[in-house]
Structure formats: structure tokens, C-alpha cells
View 1 (cartoon, one colour):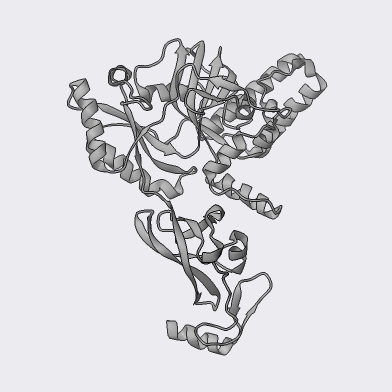
View 2 (cartoon, rainbow, N blue to C red):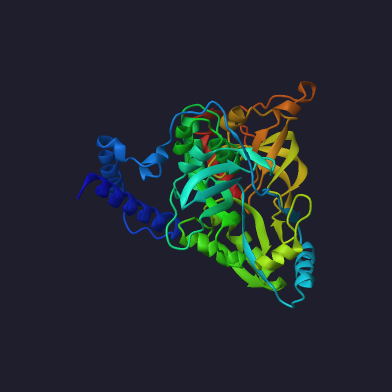
Length: 437
């Protein structure tokens, strides 16, 4: 077998592995086996550079840094979605679509609203030629080299009947596991961690050096088709399945249902599963499934009338730290608790948030009187994400002083290296803990 044919064979083999892993979510080989094939291809390309193709799996590692991003004008505007926040609004949305169709029941394609950065990717003859951010909806930034480094984005589409030209639209996200690992690395190096996965995804994708983007655990999921030349199904849901068949990643949570009850059931189900999903979501997107009916419903100035997002209750809110109290845990550890100006977040009114320990107070740089961002996800204890340093008024803030004696038994506190502050007197500690039981 010639070198050119061997490179072609290994490339096709890796493309199939990637399709099984990222699209079908059904890997057939181990990571170690994948790495062996990848290294075989890489060595062949290094010794025969004349056969390296721009769409080779080895080219996902990033190239030379850019001096700036070029501007890209979208051929078809990338609009935003209108938001709704209760079931009454959902009923109005469904009624509008039903009235326009003059049908009792119409189908809706439903999917999680991914919390990331909207991106357009264009394929010509099945090859990725351009990727751009949404920007202001009409003009975005050319992030082609960065998008090419995203592991689950195919550089070449697979299958049959692929449109000669195809623009897919979707969301670049950072899965929760990858986000946690990235922040752990940044903390270890003494660098500032990202506030949330969305900011991490956006910050990573907009790096001028594609090698940095390549090092970040990004993922992409399609949710729409933009411009295209060729034949596509007349159903939103079926179109997404076509994209999946061509090797493009689509959320496994996508569904097609009829009627208000089924729409509400999907919302309730995905809300319950939210914490266990691999990526962050902030709601559910409902789209009229029939493409012809989408055309009839049309658009308003900034959003389609055939699609809308049913948002979850906000999980972050801004409030003020009014005081800090110190609680004694069952193990004797002293935990600082921020007393907040009550704020509605995550579906409940929050007035307390844990500050964990002295190290966390130092890391956040918190003062009593600061305005802060508070996060509450599901049943998780509310926590302070960051302070709004630009809103700090020094005449209205004061430092947090950790106690030197236990607030319960008045015994002296000491800090054990590598741990939080604990009660020093073990006898009194035991007595107090027994009284708690």
C-alpha cells in the first residue's frame, strides 16, 4: 500500500472513531487504541508532508496565532430568540402557531437551550470552510481555525446526499467536567479561573492563538440550518437527524412532540435532569417543526415567531453582603456564612450563602457591604460566585475578621495546616457536638 493510500485509510479510520464517540455517543475502541492510530497517521504525515490534508484529524491541534479576527457578514442573519417565563406564555406561543396552521395539533421540535456561544459553520462539498460567531446577528468574527480544533466538530462530513453548500448553526459550550478540570489547572498555576462554563467557552473560542483554543475542552451542538444548496427535509426535527447522519453533533435530548401537555412535560423532565446533563442549560427551546409553517409565521425585528425559549428561573442574582456569621459544624469546623440582603434566585428567596473557609474569603476578596453575584443551582447551597468590585464603596464596607475563639463554647481556635479552622478544645467540642445530636 502506498503512503498516500495508508494516510487516507488511517484518516477514514479516525473519522469513523470520532463519529462513533462524539455523534453516536457509542465509542467502539479505548482512548489508548485511538491514540495508537492517531500517532501512526501523525508519523506518516510528518515524514511525507506533501500528503497532509487541511482536514486531517491531526490538524485539530491549532496553527499560528492571528493578529486579529476578520469580520464575517452572515448571509442569513443569526437572530435571537424571544423568551417566555411561564406556562401561560407557552400556551400563547402554541396558540399563535396553531391558529396560523389551522390545525388542532401541530408538532414542535424541542431541545435544551444550551448556555454557550452561538456559532455558524459552513461546509462546501462536505468540507468545513468557515466558522463565525453570531456577533450582532449580522456580522460576526471569523473563528474558523479555533472551531476546527473542537474535538466533536467534523472537518469533513460523511454519508450521502450532503448539500453542496450547508450552513449549520449551533452552540459552542464547555461541558461541566471539562470546565471543572480547566479551572483546577488555572488555580494550580495561580491564574484567574472562569466564572462559569459559558464565559469559559466564549473566552476559549475567541483566542487569537488557536493552540490555546485546542487545549480547552470545548464541544459544539447543532440546533439549526442556515443557508444551503440542495435538498433538506421539511421538518425541523428530521433536519437535525440528517445533520447527525452526516456526522454533526446534535443534542441527544432533542425531541418532537404535539400539544401543550407534552411540551410542558418535556420542560419538567429536562429541568429535573438539568444538574446531571453534561453541559449547562438555561431553559428549553420550542420550534414549530413544519418548515413551511415556520415560513408562514415569519419573523419580527430580532426573533423568529416560530421559535421561543422557555427560560428557567435565574440561578444567579446580585445582592449585598450585610454581615458574616460563623457557624460550628458537626466536626468542629468553623464555617463563615454570609448574611445577604434577601434576593430571589433559583426559584427561592436566598438570605444566606456559605463562604466555606478563610481561604475562600481571601480568594474572593470579599468585604462586608460588597455587592456580589450569588448562585443557586437546584438544591445546591447558595454560594457567592464573585464580587462586583466596580460597585464597591469603601465608606460602606469593612473587613471580615475570623474569630479567635469558638462562638459556641469560647474555646481557643487554631488552624491545622491544610485544613479549615477548627475548635481547639476537643473535650468541649465533643460535648457541644453531643448536645447538637
